[in-house]
View 1: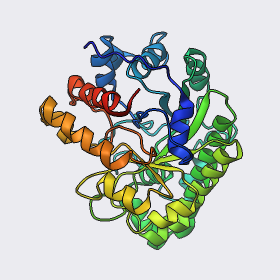
View 2: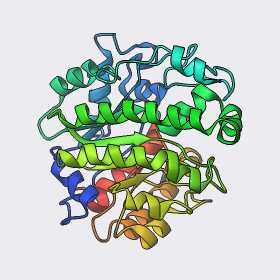
View 3: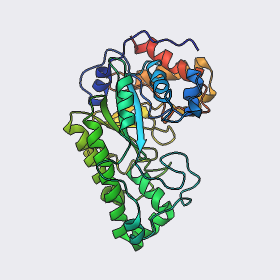
Length: 346
């Protein structure tokens, strides 16, 4: 795969996209996450069999993103909370690893210290590997809603909202405090150029929680996270899947700078930009299924249309609507990036 990028990385160009101030000199790229299998296929190294403790894990990870022309390294580390075998990774069902069913469970649970909610050393390691012009876009793996719904179960959380709202409030307060502490410390690191949070709030037709409950329990945490970023002069990106139409105005009011994750059957990124782009920068948005299944010529034409629709004012970054998956052909994704470089990349 002979894809090569000749431009020098410059995180300042991506900042112009996030802040919607000035026009970048080229079209930046952005992804929320890449699967270990995709990284392994692109780099030719067994990344899918490595752990973060492996000496080659983080060098391979940085090489992967820089080698594809990114100005930033997307990075997230989970809270120091272990639930069975889950720590922000793949799961086997929302009720499989419930650990909080009562106030007593909450009080007995071995919560991490608020001062050390995540393993910051991984960010320090990556910071030492960054080439000139590259910064980390970092945060906590899994968001406040995702952690609470995992620890209580989706069904358990639904019952508790009716039967034990005090417990629900305790859970969101605790998880929110851990996230906000992590973000304050990450924002203080020179190697971190922006903060990000993944927290899937919805599905195809609605949000998982009611808009009222999102406003009550989730958005106060987002406001604290945004404040942590902005206090250090750094933008905040939210990745959230699902139909968020009922809460977009609320998210904008939180001060979030950019939004990632778009599904064309819900709200195409070009339409999102038309409605909200002056106040909230869209990132990515190209359909994963289209990239996986279509020919190189079709992908080029599709990417060109997206650039035309979304980058006219310079406030958009090229990427998928969700993530780089194990099943996505690497060569197809490289067509996307090559097209970006050809159209607006130099």
